[in-house]
Length: 120
Image 1 (cartoon, rainbow, N blue to C red):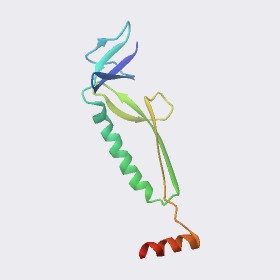
Image 2 (tube, rainbow, N blue to C red):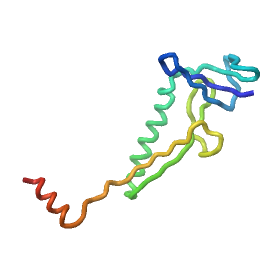
Image 3 (cartoon, one colour):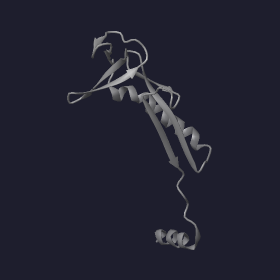
Image 4 (tube, helix red, strand yellow):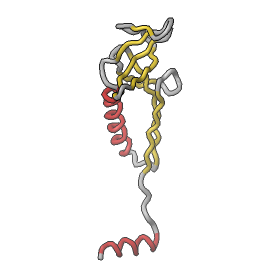
C-alpha cells in the first residue's frame, strides 16, 4: 500500500508525493493507496530548505573555492507535509543540486585597458 501527501498548488492543481509513513486522515486514492492532505502549502514546505541552502552557500563561500557543487535529497515526511533532507539516491522524492562558481577575474593587458576606460 502506498501512502501519499497531497499538496494544493492553486488553480485547481494538486501534487501527490509518496511518503513512507502511514497517513493520518486517510482518503483512498485506489485500492490499497492512502492519501492525506498536507497541512501547509507546497511552497511553504520548501521555505526551510531554501533558507538552509542560503546559509550553506554563505558558509561555503568562506572556503574561496573556484566551484562548489552540493547535492542532497528531499523527502516528504508525515501528514504535515514537511520536507526532510535525505541521502541522495535513497528513496527521496526530489534530488537537488546547487552549484555556483566564483566569477573569473579578467586578466592581461586588455582587461587593464577596459578598467581604465571605465574610469573616464
